[in-house]
Amino acid sequence: MAVEPLTQRSSRDGKVYHRVAEVETQLEGVEALDWPDLVDRLSVKSRSSPRYLREETLVYLCRRAHARGTSSDVSSLYRLLLARIQPGVESKLSGLDEHRREGAAEAVRNALAGRIFDLSTNRGDFLQVIFFQGLTALILTEVARQRKEQERERRSVSLDAASDADESEASAPMEAEVAQRVNRNAPDRAAAIHQGLALIKDDRHRMAFVLRYHERLPVAEVAARMGVTPRTILNWLTAAQAILVAAHGDSYDHAR
Image (cartoon, rainbow, N blue to C red):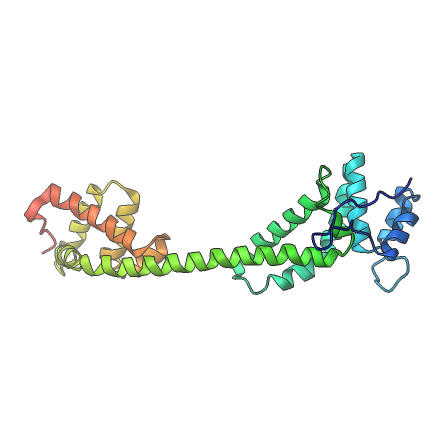
């Protein structure tokens, strides 16, 4: 069976891409191989070996297997390709924040698969010409996207921190009032806290109340433990205070 030619044209000069001679020779050689013999060739790992199949060749074989509907062959070929590129992908993504790297790697793999297995277009042709240059372009595109998201997150965090500081300052009188009512060093302080907890029905508000006024943790630490912002904790404490005041009014002084 003849090797299928490329059809994509270069955006630079308008000429149709051509595979390098080594890849064309490899493809002509593997076209006649049955699957067991092809697997034997694929097992060669040394790039210096004349039997080593280049990544451009693997891309062609992946597309051919996909066109033939041999899903098991597609899976085997694509896994081999991914195993080869993984170290390089991880290295180029190492500059991203740690929690973003796996998502970025997955995005690169998805973009690569999209080009290789899209038989309705010739988007994958360049990967049969200079594979690693095409792969690098996909990686750099994803890195740029991730860095934009990182910067957006950092700006958001900075704005939240400033807002939390303003909220904390504005809520200082409320904090002082609740602390004065709840944190008295009197024998019935525990009873007051218990009574207050019974009135606070929202589990999150109740937990914030306990951590802030029973455990006496700073608002920032309460927020860290509960996985929310300090502003959210202050809002919950305000809601808890409103419940207590509504129930007891100015008589909510049983911790005195």
